[in-house]
Length: 231
Image 1: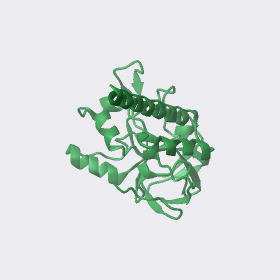
Image 2: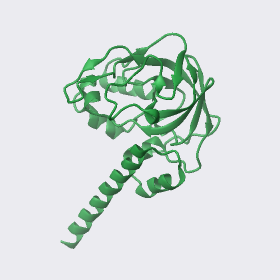
Image 3: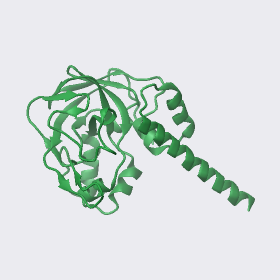
């Protein structure tokens, strides 16, 4: 499938800004989660660690400066809503920003998106977890979400400010490597991921670990294929 190529000057719109509505109990060692996010009115402050009024419970695997803001595309949410036969309102994916007009899962790693006076940098894909599975109530949800690879994108905050529903979103910088959130999540082309590692200075430790995992998986698959051929 041909994926959209994001360019400087592409624009979208903030449909909703979402923060934690209530913590939920989860069946794991985590215990509690702040995945239940819902839209709020007015303008919301955005600082280095995320939106005012928002927080994470599992600080080991979520949050921090490299996962300060999570965005999901309304277009992807509508497709899921059709498939699942239910409404998926803003915040259902645990996102802070529900956006239209931009293919969020095909954002280029390291790209800069301006929303009002706030400047965000694309940092990583969302990796679905057991908490997301429980929250969804859908069978095999994590596997289905991963296979579709419409993950949405995490952002770090380069310039603090405020964001409100109705704000325009503008892509103001796209790195030349062109490697996207989806590319990183699927790991389908290890050579391109190594290019990402070599050319993108903003990569977090977690992203380096993702690349390493993809490399090990692909190396293991190649070794298995060689064994089958020689057997």
